[in-house]
Image 1 (cartoon, helix red, strand yellow):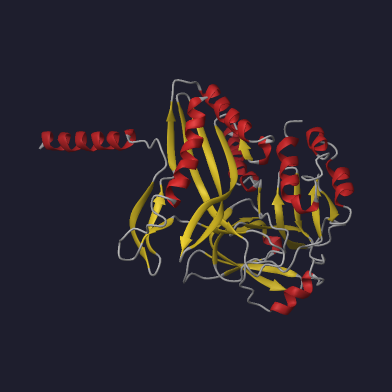
Image 2: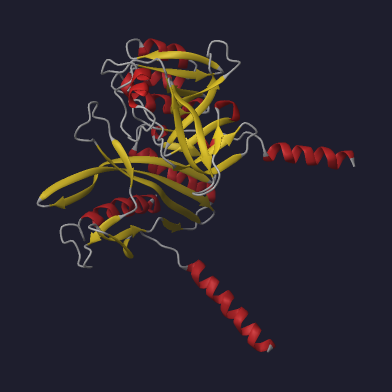
Length: 221
Length: 187
């Protein structure tokens, strides 16, 4: 009897295990700031318990970016508010938004949404909410200026810094010191390191592919 | 009555069998009945093609990997996932889609996912997430913008073929994918 109880518990835990692997190696390659659509679009939300809900999703913007999401199974159904504390990840229209600690230095406490540029198994790169863009404006100012309905797909300028998450540690990647910062972060991958001699490939504008190559070759170490 | 039921069941089973044996060997655009105002009739590409052979699953896996390595110095650049029975790649081909409108030729890049499901004697090749890319005219940062592509509008709303596209635009795309398939078959 005890055996069957343990087996049942094991099966239940596996069904709801947080399998985020199907979202790996996805993201949006653009270096511009991405806006999560504030109109209803088909999307998937992975909740904190590991279960997934699929339906219509739209982003709700606050002062510093996406503050929450709204979800409904289909048109006409009741709408549900999803905050960062309620979920792990939201995937809408090839944009992945992650739920991470609001205070990245503390790594605990309240959570916040961050738009991923690349979501990987070993290294994830996501947008820095405080980043400046190439057109000289702070991205948070851009968000405020556009109001609630931000229904456009183009970004608000090329972002001059991103944040990276590796081994549960956060670090900053800036356009100015990209190579030095990236080598420090990814120096544990020999194949990746040997490719950095190709300066045409190893540059800030190629961040997506540089991150992808790291993740793809890291597992072969 | 029993004979009637048995005959119906037999017919049903034979029908299923027949459907299962029809496996596409090449990619081809086919006109659908889906008509969009101003754009015309949509033609879609079959998204699954089969490569049948006498190779084992390990040999088939090697064929696909050898094909990828022959095209890319760093295969990892395009590989999204790689298991013993499935390889998923994402390719981006420059100016694969060319269209002529009002005498002006336009070209778009195409991005797609290719999934190779590998078993003994067969490689199932599935195309998905096809997107067309363009740099918007008013773009400040000249970054490519990708939009989902359901297919090509090779026929006008009247049903007449678009002479500047039919047999040109579709053929270029079909040839691209069929060449990839043949390349894997020949390994």
